[in-house]
Length: 362
Image 1 (tube, rainbow, N blue to C red):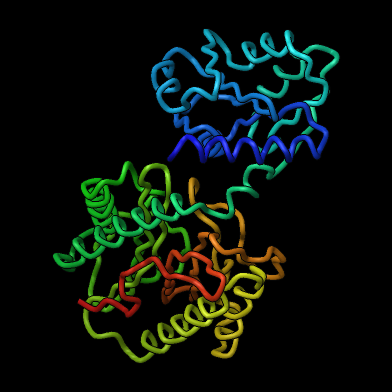
Image 2: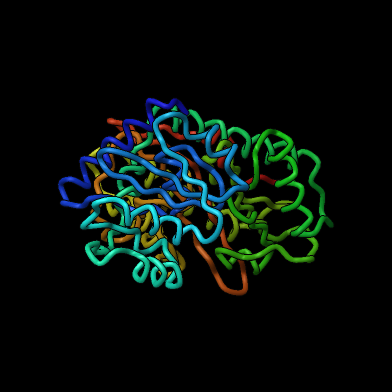
């Protein structure tokens, strides 16, 4: 990511803070810190306002922080608790109204911050200031997400070519994650889901030692994390010849997914997209079997705003990266979900996921 892009993000946030009459914001979220200054270490606090950005981290990250943040962010190395070092630094500054990410701070750190700050400083909770800016991706961010999507899809295709009955759910998950890493991913974007038979009706099932057998639905939900940016894809596999019920359910979910994709365009609401998928499944008598939202934003985190759920009023904007993933889940039988990563355009959307949507029969 170019230094200029980080500077622009901080400048926009600085303006937001001035409009809220805040003298600064404490950023605790790792994803938000990376978004604002490029630092990817797992121990950091960023102070930011319209005039400066100061990153507090510990000696383990001294070299990394200097390398990743560049000349426009001050790196403050703290030997001891970061909050204590932060408070010591703030006591020497005039900061009267200090915002903090209320959903990203532990109670222990909040207590330390509250007791360590000078009396003149008032702590004010804020939510979503950075996340709302992160919803619309830059050209460079879309490029990184596209690369992540490619890795995910290639790993799935490579694995599927040699897939045979008898492999265990957790073995397939491990193979998919190995191939993503081999293709360049730093890690999976989340714990890979592989669920077969009736267990595929669990939307977030954990892989087990259960072997994959013929004539059972197999759900695979996977994603890669490349240079911090995530992808997300769900595909269905079937060993053998699927029966009429499987074909009918799959056709209904595919119809719902295509309807949702057709509703993705700048100006429509997130709820409009969800409604498009939900109407199709309800027309097939499967409305109650659709138990989650139609999708979510993704980027530096696998789940980001906007949420594409019922009655969600957020209007889609060109550059948003989202998933489209309707599904149906029938206890005792199984579940079907089809998921792509897409980018919102002024007119319609671009589906980044190249993997075919058809039920993969082996």
